[in-house]
Image (cartoon, rainbow, N blue to C red; front, side, top):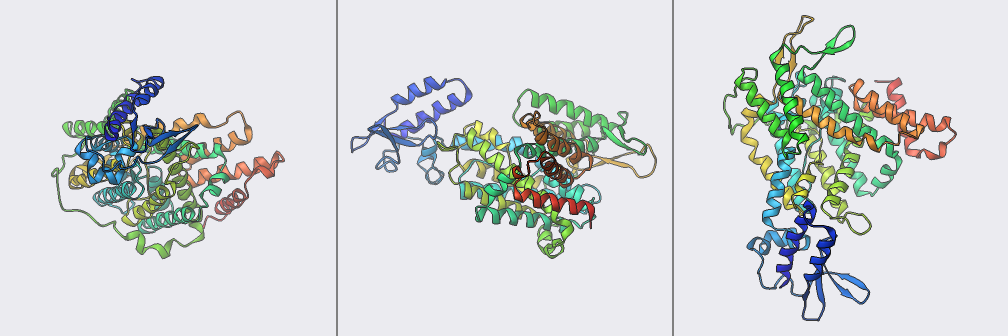
Length: 532
């Protein structure tokens, strides 16, 4: 057995081990049989944790690349001997072309819902952004970022417009503060540049350490509730009421019934663990809506006439975003993007067994740099902030270990571009009569169920909050409560930070508050007292 045959056998064993059909003890026993001797007498084998090569020298394992490894007889399949195999280090990570392509397809299926949902959110009536334009920007920005992550960082995580971040842009900046969409996108660019500076100056650890762990999880939970609330609103399941603020929607309306059907279907698919359950739910709900005449039929399925109206708008508006009143919003965008990215990258790295012995991810700086520049690119394209997707873990679970997985996802986003007529119908809104009279209510019954389910998935982090510690739990509770109810992510974060500082001071523990947190809490307090 030569080195490449061992590579192939290791990949097979690894897939069996990850799927649970092979125990760790059996895996180790099989690995002990996979040894190859080089010309110098060293017996090389594969590391179970990293998939890399090492040999036993006395009492220690020495990592490295076997001599003449790349020029050894090519008994492995042609793809591993190809330029792709060498560039993406297939052999070192125990994978091959077929596995990486399947992993890329799996990741794309689990995150392709953003193609429908992002245009639906950013194209909400009143934002000034067109659904076809946001669709084009979403695909282009996601494709560029995912391909860059694969080529530059060789890491199997895909990127696209972030849910929660796009809600800040649409509902807080544009509809809430009445900013032009170009200025809102400029705020995203500034946020991305801020994260880039932190990456380049290695200050990200200081920022990470400044935020209490409970608040980090609370922000994720609050954003999940916020997204779910937007989903309920867009579905027509909840409606505005002049007395009680909110009430149950009218289920006698076709669009509301369609949204309820879509929610039941999507929840069932996700509960059964079906990969791509979100996008399948969107497509089936859209098809049912067309059959019953609730959703209009598309004028066509494919069109090569692309709407580029959002491209570059944020870049031209950069001078307009330099105002004090936008500092809390930019900071909220920054924190949401920054911490979500760190959690996603570490989670995907752990799933793919790509962390080293100390739990660190090799090449982390490159990964974070690509992610931060992707946020800049998303704002420049008009797609909102582009960030790493936790759904990438689905592709890693299928065996994806290299950046080729991300490249495949990026190419699939490009292949989706001609389907803009279909996206415009599925991601668009339909009117229902307002029971209070006046203007019709616009709902998005096809994509709203996906938002509710994504909100549930994000909310599961609530179990990590230390509820038994009052000085951690109360700020977390206020963050979770106020974030969706004020319809503003930055306000929720502000309530959490301010209450955290005040409770620590009241308990006589000022030293437990990071100095940066005092500054941020003061900025939020000023923003509340002097909103403009």
